[in-house]
Image 1 (cartoon, one colour):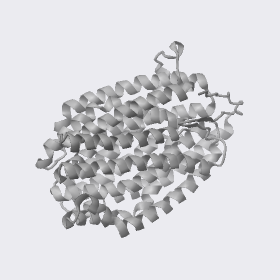
Image 2: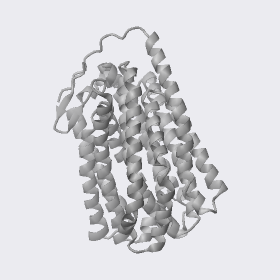
Image 3: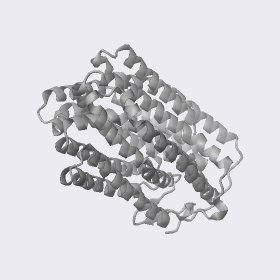
Amino acid sequence: MLSPLEGRLGMVKDLTKGKPTSLIITFALSMIASNVLSYVYGMTDSLMVGWYVSTDALGAVGAASPFCDLIQGFAASTISGFSLLAGRTFGAGDRNSLRRLMANVLYLSGGLVLIATLLCTVFCRTFVVWMNTPEGFVELATSYLSVIMVGMPISAISWVCGAMFRALGDSKTPLMISGLCGALNVFFNFLFLAVFPLGIVGAAYGTLCASLTGAILYLICFRRRMKVLHFGREDAAFSPFISRQLLRDGLPLGMLNSVITVGALILQMAINGHGENVVTGINIGTKLLSILWMMIQSFEGAVVYFCAQNIGAGRVERVRGAVRNVLLICIGIAGAFAALFILFGRYYYMLYVGENETLIKYASDYIFTQVIFFPFMAMLCIWRGGLKGIGNTMPAVMCGVIELISRLAVSFLFADNLTVLFFAGPAAWVTASIYLGLSFPHFLKKKEAAQKIASPQPERETVEVRS
């Protein structure tokens, strides 16, 4: 049996033992805490941009965000997909494969991020203009994104280490590192925006400095706490077989993120055409909506790694009930947040724009059209996480395609109708959740059938992880 490692910065944990729902909730809570800290610090950064630069700068960051999400999201999601194989291998107790796998994760991640950084650096302004960004925002958005994209290799170190920590059941180390780096991000942004007023580029420099700190901390923790993943010369050879396995998991998740983000890009382009006030108002509403996304996606991530370890260990029977219970919890969370957004959303918007009633109205109208569909958001995330965790990543990509088609239909057919445009996201949640509600049980049954006809599993090799 795998032995948990208690350490000052976290615990490598076997998710194949213990009560499934409790394990997922505990794992998710660490991810939620990490995301909450990141969100609070990110909100503070946005407030600083609005206070120390201008509301135009705040709008420019929001208008450019879908492009940033597209590129960084593809790379980070692909790397996260690599870690699913690590989770299954860890669940199976195969130490030697873990070391060889880690070496190949580094090779593939390094090549992917370098290519993405080069493309973004060269075509950054072209993409900003192509997105139909309001003319007053183009130069601001380009300046900000150029710095963020150049720093992507630094961020990639944290993506790789964070994904591998979580794959091995440790969500506490990423929590502590992200909390510290978020605080440093606020400090650096204050330094570059208020003390040394560099404008919108100062916010990008602050993010870059915080990312560098996080990368260093992750490397230190990885060296000290993840000895099971340390590979020597005999494990360092590039393996086409392992790389194909990694890409089989990673690329579909990168594609999934890209497909979803392309839909968001097209929707953002349609919104951009309605003027700067609309762009800024919806950006503020989106920031409020991202609080719920952050909560639900934390549970999705916990479901992914729980399912991966249990599938690797041949414990398929633990998956179904755990996913059902977590889904019910998330639907309850979605309902509670809907009520909070309706009752107290205005006070949140005022943090950014004060008494500007025009911007507050756009933000309020946008959020009001979203809240009644929040349960579908929960279904989408949890069932999608279950599919990714049990190893069926291509159906998850199909879910993204369905979301894209839904957003495209609304964006192109009703580009001039702002009220209808607000329903593009909910339309995607509803259609994708219907598909996932049918496909997740189907593929889980196939896993259960395969397990029943498989030969009995031998006792798993003990993987000792020493500090």
